[in-house]
Length: 75
Image (cartoon, rainbow, N blue to C red):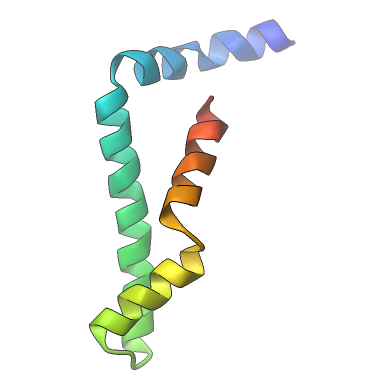
């Protein structure tokens, strides 16, 4: 069963290895999307845009921590 899972993740592993910069850019874009979406919700709730952005980052509980979790999840 482990061998089957390994073969299923092989394309992602190769992509991460050979296109590391692109993968990191995509991760940054994905996190930015979620932060902007959350900040937008806070702004709709009445916070000014700068405070809404800070609140989104606080709720996200650390951008770099989330990036590390994503990197760990993809192996």
